[in-house]
Length: 424
Image (cartoon, rainbow, N blue to C red; front, side, top):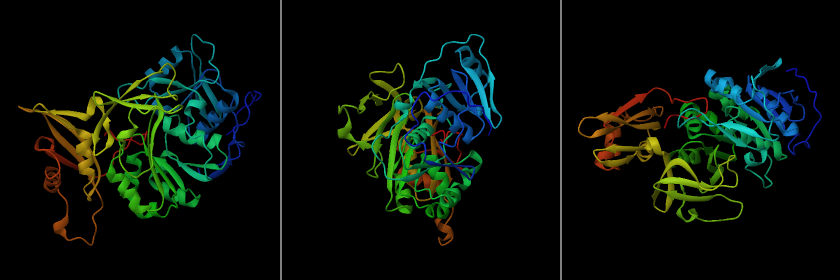
């Protein structure tokens, strides 16, 4: 990639500047990446992973006001919004930056980074951060080589990227979307021993080739971005009995707020309303998680209602899903889609599940589900094959009658979006 570099450094080189980067099979370092000349402020639509990394390095050394994304996450309406907000929208590829200039340019805000939310509550919106508020790991870390499977510019992508930028010894292997199905092969070839992904990412990998996953020498596995249930934690523990398995609750609005390493879904009830200097405070209001965080986005100081529904069970606070979609009203009785999903996911033959409500006469709604079944074990008798009736019986043994799915549809593959999430 050839790009012009006309600015002088305005910040010290980041501490991880000599960390190894592997992109598209090519080994680089942060130091060897070019720093493209970008307009300020810039909304950069990266053509590929390496272009996104160059934009991140450019921001780290120049402090250019930056919104980073892929072109597929920014539709025509969003481009218009960005131009009207004074951003120069630039497609960044091997030939450099290709800008669209706003009609009314504005002064830049030095050091500002913008994230686009995932859009789970409607159209994506911009949330302001800095490199510091996006840096979630500050203590010294053992040397690791991390896999980064996330879409450029997402909060989860920045979590991994800032770790490599700011910590010596934190190397990075980035996979492009067309490499996702074969990422264990790429990871094993480059010595990846730490990987971060959504529960859907891990479930798809286990479903497609659990043996290939087991050959990756992982010492650290991290999950986040979606509700994390006990089933996926247990499945990963079976494959990696000695690795540290962590789940993280984080969002563009409040940053990384919860980190759990004990192998259990949810977090301890004792963590609620615990005030510790420099750390987020977690609360629950009307079954909604509320976070007060020092790493919040711009303009979000104080308690922030996250929109995520929680349930307290056996001394743990479980995050079950989005408040506006998790609750299903069945004849006046409330059902948590996340709880039902967790029951289905706990079935040994289920690789993935989605639970929703469907309109029904008399009841108002009924619970329905979609599942992807794990590959059949050739050693099991044909009578052991799981069908819809067997799954309904499984749920009926574990849920109140009104929460049992009335329809269960079997899909042939686990659906996934560019953000590595499913609509669960």
